[in-house]
Length: 167
Image 1 (cartoon, rainbow, N blue to C red):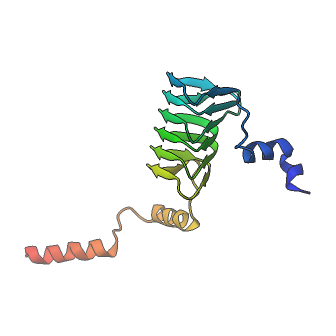
Image 2 (cartoon, rainbow, N blue to C red; image 1 turned 120 degrees about the horizontal axis):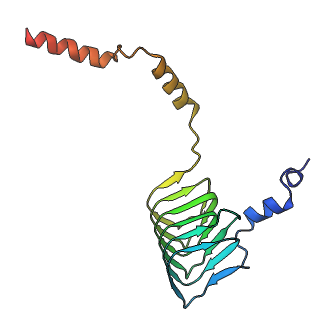
């Protein structure tokens, strides 16, 4: 059974086809929009937006900020393609692609991240649904099972040496 049969053609194409140029809403190259934007479906930004951008809860919103686009505010959407500049936090609830021409000044929150060489992020990359390594899980389990009264050996040795000095 192929992967297309498991996930269906539309699902796979919608996430991989982020670079599509058809936009339901567009901010043109010589435009400046001041205020917050809530959108559904597709939003393409080629101009300047001064405000926060949020995808509506109902749909699978996709935002494309092309190489001439500038956003001064936070962005929240399921699928995000960044080629331009963002001064604010970027939060993707599904997939984010940061192209080589992109500049992000703020934190990037993601589930799936595709970051091309040459992209600049002046902030932290933070995974929404973080995976923990098996080693860390084992260490936290073993630490929680230890008696709270027992201290590590380096603390015990430091305590006994301080008692000898006080006599």
